[in-house]
Length: 32
Image (cartoon, rainbow, N blue to C red):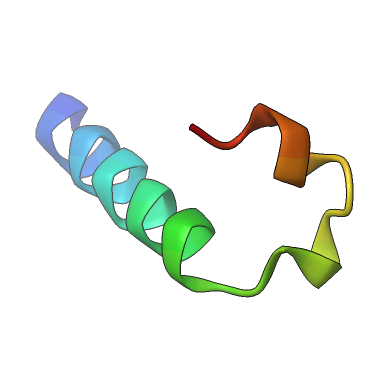
């Protein structure tokens, strides 16, 4: 199960980087 969760984390991280930040305006300042 840990492997599945880790995979979801990686996928979510990629989505956050790829998706436009207009969904989360505050994410602009948090992005590196």
